[in-house]
Image (cartoon, rainbow, N blue to C red; front, side, top):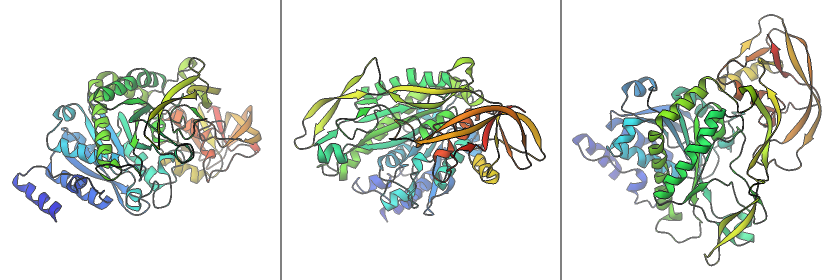
Length: 506
């Protein structure tokens, strides 16, 4: 009732209402419907805001994007501007990591109220505060179908992932920011060994070696170090993401290399892609608010503001490198057309060990521990980009999947002969253990035979002259550690001629 009265009084010029979380004195989390009502209120109150429906979750809950901009064409038609970055921010892809959603609502409230005015002068924003409303309402990590949407960006099996990919194309952001939380309590590290991790904010960027070379160099060498420095200077200790530390005898590396996650998927599209993992405090601790949620939201908010201010300051070089990458991919390899099919982390020979702080669970004292450092990215099997890929199996299903990714293709209407590299799988080896950084469950041995091939009516031809060519090739080629056939429901990696293959000339 109090929330409704506050909202209705706004017509008479009262201040922008607090978020539902703030209204509850930061003691309890609102459900997804209450969050949606609040975003609708902001839309109603401000000519600089527009709430856009993206679709519904597996559980039937709305997923929405709040646009904030001083540009009427952007709000009306989602048209970007030549000198103004568009930043798309995702909160709570994992339902049990709620602080991102609350921080985005706070950010939206502040911008609608006229705070941080320089940001809307210099940026267009797309805020998806609740990327997984099922997880919020069901109090769990995954959606109502138990899909982990955060690692579904190749297969696109979950409706949530498909609509978020659609939103990437609809709003065409220059920057994608994905807000997560990382728990300091670990099953083995804490319960069995007595230690917790001790980090406040961890950041990473797209790190797949096939990301456009100049874009990757810019984000790795310039943007990421500056973001870490700015967040640290603002009072929140920030470091580069080291992945999950779950045991004292493990090696540490970085965020995963695969394109199943949003960070690398968006970067392969040519976007500046940033991940934040803020501290998720221990359930058993003593805090002013449940599980320290107020402090966690503050840290997420600080991280977001620092990122937005940096993007605004870096607008000119950022736009140059990102928009060129979206139009004309250039690999870091020879002649700019090389794709690496395989990749993993290995020992960093320049720094084989690193020291990281851990906190003793029993008494809270901090201690430095040494870990093997496996953050060196190793590539294998370089392949020159083909002219196209041909698909000769389950063509209608693959066509729907390609369309969901916005990858262009041609359906063959009459037999066509062309020169191709037929791929023959001679052996399929199960990986004895998970490959660091990728979801490569099996590894095929592939023999390449160049020969004339006749495609039949209904076969598909996917040209590699399109902007999304490198992303398409990594998902279609069976030699790729990121191939679609590593995903559940696409068990095509069997000995024999493979039904998808590179085309040399057509």
